[in-house]
Image 1 (cartoon, rainbow, N blue to C red):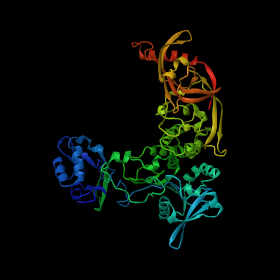
Image 2: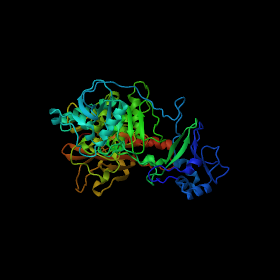
Image 3: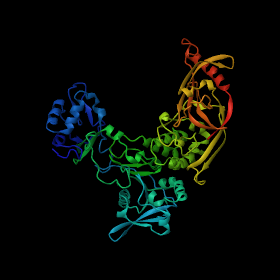
Image 4: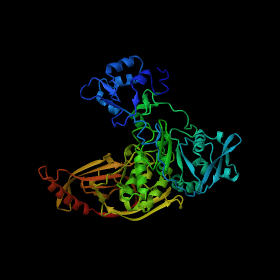
Length: 603
């Protein structure tokens, strides 16, 4: 019996003798419950062994087997949960005629394009390694580093350093994450590495804008991206030993013996699926890392739980886990849309953009001013397919869709005082759980039109970068004030039993509002609120639009989202559904088309 159970995944003599796993082509799960003939015991694969009963589990548990104790406590009263609660990839996976006990990874084609930027170059002097900063490397292979800064950097590229020619460093003096990345590059036979802190002049705004503007090219053309996902700061590093599964009692792990078909012995580690799904590495929460993950063709991801190889050429996991993060879906769809060899895509480029924005907004950013720049590379590349005008995070041709966002906790958040983006753009909200209205059954309201727009870029040559100001001049239908909730009383839902339709019929409608962060407190008896219609939901006979607040004469700011729906009891409960739907659409459609149209400037 091992005595270091707190330091590594559990394994003991009982595991060696009773839970031996042999390689098999059988597709059955590694662990399963015995069939209906007996429900008094469970057993571990393979089936040619004698079953392990619950009483035997209890006996092994009393002798100190942590794995037996875990299973006995978990399944003695709930055997049906076994197959879903403990998961493991069948290791090794099916490998055809390849070398036994090896892992197959697929490498995508290499891209060679000249990149005009600074790079770090690894050299050796005597017994020590040095890093030199070089400008431009033609078509040489290079790696890029994706990592968490974790605060101010003690080693950066500056205008003074360039001017004085101080472009060489002893590797041992660098922060640990940079040292580790140099080591990985040397092991891979790469001489060049791109690191933002050392390849962008951090005290030169113009150089930062130029470099960020070509971020897509830097990452797309890299040989490999080294992602230091497990490190919270640049000082931590990512190559130090991990705490194996089982070190934390809340995340139990068990090492079981494995025997390949040729008789060689190894081991597999069993962990609860929730242990791999709920843990998030620090880098996965960083906004800047999101586009680095999406754009890089090949990735070595050093996480706290595992090291993963990710490549556009193969979507299969290579780290032994069955489940993959949801961000993989976005990466795969991005590659499919950008690939000229794929003729048809299930997801449209604009649908993908919306999904990318939602995933991106779940990550945090230190400076909200960077919200647009940190997604600029993806926007630039995707626009080669969308081919549209980019307006502060939105696309002109689909602007009515891009404006239909809402914030999950808008009531409890404040909008920052500092300007980051126009109020109608999702980028004006620095962090949080962003969502879009479902538009599967929506069409643009025929009364809505963008008449003019003007967005001032912080750096004119950086089309996808930060902005200093911006407005939309739009024309659209306006919801009557009586249909909106009384915001002075803090109401966000309003129901009207009878609304006159131009002196003819009456209808029953309801209006709900989702406030943006920084929603005003309306105490005055007079205030100017406008609900502008953007979309018509044909399936639900509903109007979707944005709520606007007049902040100065002839200038409005977005403060929320609204939805107006027709009451369900329009014709009574006995009316056939088809007749009810037809009448509903006719009446509500007539009411909608009769709404007043006006022009509004939104800043």
